[in-house]
Length: 230
Image 1 (cartoon, rainbow, N blue to C red):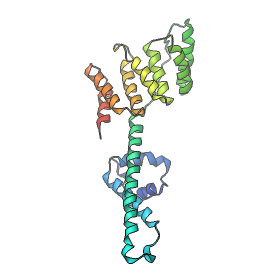
Image 2 (image 1 turned 90 degrees about the horizontal axis):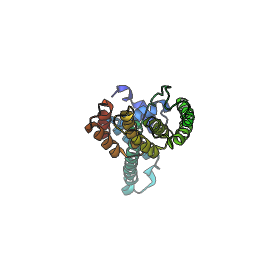
Image 3 (image 1 turned 90 degrees about the vertical axis):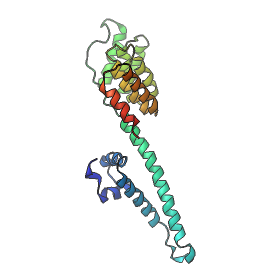
Image 4 (image 1 turned 180 degrees about the vertical axis):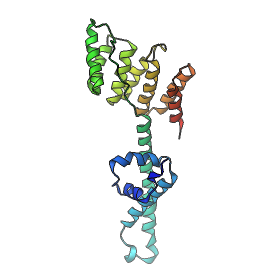
């Protein structure tokens, strides 16, 4: 991991909530792997909370230290809870990140077929990154067209439109038969959709099953390995 994050200013800004949005994601991903920075964040957050407590000067001597100790313990617990939640969110975001597969403008259906008009409009929306419109149009086309090509791009459009569960169903449909040219990509993106739907175990099982069945796409095994990491 890059040493760019190992400075007290970055930790202080993160704890204070003033770290710039451009650096925030990178630093939180760094926290997943750096025990030293996680320790500094916990201590920094605890110190900020403890320093906000009223001075114990007016309290009875036997109770002076108790509020500060309790405050620090509570702060540490709160920071740990926030960190675990953040870690899970960052990990899901990282594993579920996708680069939309490019669409090469080749006919998916015969040009005289009326369904081809829906497909063409859907793929034009997809190419323009209008995934909501693409999902609507390709969904209408899929009611008649059961091809793996339409199911694949419909599944990716649904996933990028935030409809992960529906995306899984379409992408799994695009994996069959295994000999179709979209099967490998459909398996990979179905696993991405499962991660986004918080079903990482199912994603890993799908990937390993494809590898056992002889899939030669190196991405599948590598993605399964990345999901298995703690």
